[in-house]
Amino acid sequence: MTRTLPAGITVTARVPASSANLGPGFDSLGIALGLFDEIEVRTTDSGLTIKVEGEGADDVPWGPSHLVVRAIERGLESAGVWADGLDVVCRNVIPHSRGLGSSASAVVGGLAAGRGLAAKFDSELSCDDAELVQLASEFEGHPDNAAASVLGGIVVSWTEPPADPAVDHHARTYRAVRLDPHPALCTTVFIPEERSATAHTRGLLPELVPHGDAAFNASRAALAVVALTQHPDLLLPATADRLHQMYRASALPLTTRWVTRLREAGIAAVVSGAGPTVLAFGTTELPAELHEQAAAEGLRVVTPSISDGVRVD
Image 1 (cartoon, rainbow, N blue to C red):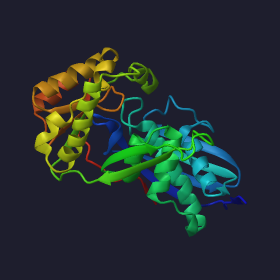
Image 2 (cartoon, rainbow, N blue to C red; image 1 turned 120 degrees about the vertical axis):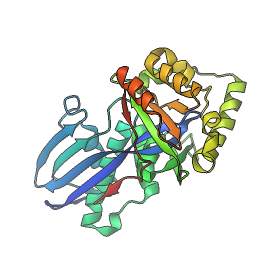
Image 3 (cartoon, helix red, strand yellow; image 1 turned 180 degrees about the vertical axis):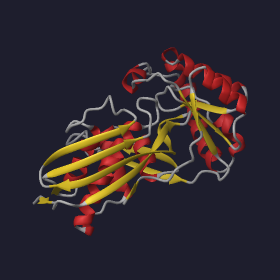
Image 4 (cartoon, rainbow, N blue to C red; image 1 turned 30 degrees about the vertical axis):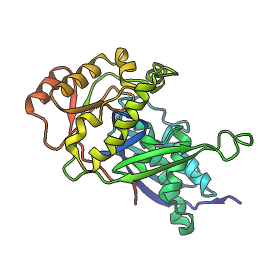
């Protein structure tokens, strides 16, 4: 039986941005980045009020269709509770539609906030990381960004098919493990003004790829795990890709130009998620002249830390 939460319960979720793929790890590798959205939620007696500040404030709906609100409600539902009213404040820092996991962060933050409300009502309704990864990945349809925002650090994620596809072919199980990055590893992101629709760039990918390219990516994805966690000197070869970036190049000319420029300079650069942001790995700060050149071409340069996962207070 669904129980109703009393008015006056308050939680705040702080959720990091993420980058997926990391070059060769298409739909499987991810990393949490220190750009944070904050979601404050309070239960009320009735109705919904929502306020959005920062990134996307003028673009997202201020009502029940807002992604964060839908995720909060799903979090409550998964705990078997409900709220007659909600007061929601979203303070957004993560750029939208730039390949930095803004939708996954909204989903993870909303789910975590919903379960946080439930746990304050009844501690037995708390949610562990594995359940949160599952809930968020069901919402997103894939686990790479969602798992990074839940677990933090570097994540390897995968999807297990249903035990009996004939019964329910949608009942996938999403799993992920966190890896701690090498202590010297640092990241730089180059964020264009232009936006990119994941559905569009995903639609550019072929249904079939050459066997040699698949084998190449399998070896580089395995090497990427080693490079990111133990041997950063291998980052350049470990982030090479033949599975997705080249097929999206025509839709991301500025991104592709900068990935090529950085890699030719010996810097391990990749397309962040579906783009258009460029993610670069290293163990030292990039030269100041690169920052200046990027700014001259309309790119915002940020050096986020590698973050822990979502936190709820």
